[in-house]
Image (cartoon, rainbow, N blue to C red):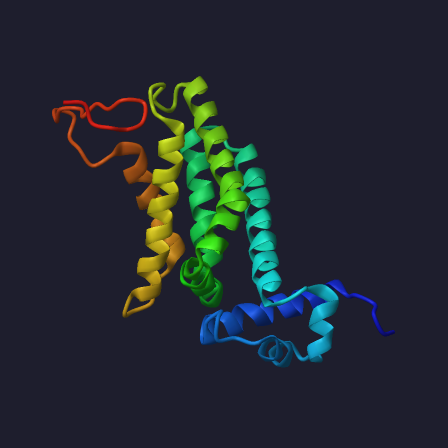
Length: 211
């Protein structure tokens, strides 16, 4: 029936877009390329999406909302903050490690536009940081995390470490299982790199070093 939407067809279009954007680049890709890969007519795309930008926006909205929701479910049953942080990190790296095209779009194509970055920072990244903040705040109350950490800064640091781990994996000459790096990343985040006898560098509430 003409004009009837199908969830399966929408999913097929989004999956096709990931492959096209990863291989051709977002700006060089055309809606017709996505339609061809999805096996639908060009006009069918517009039953589901306004334009190519809308496809990219909806793609990441769906991927990240699913990631954050499933990460919330994963941490709910875990007893300690370190275990919860590890679960979030494992999901982050495993989702992208199992779909190289998605990782390419996430790490490369999304960063091509300041407008895209502003949109995603204001939506899914905010929710991601909120999840990390909840995990760490609970860890502070339970005593498994330091009470004096700046949770906003800590969330950005952990995300940044995971983000760079994915980028390095994409650029590596030889493939390796990305998900296996979740534990070392979280361990370094929790334990730090310094020895106990090293002096602590103190800063103000904005992170500026005090002299």
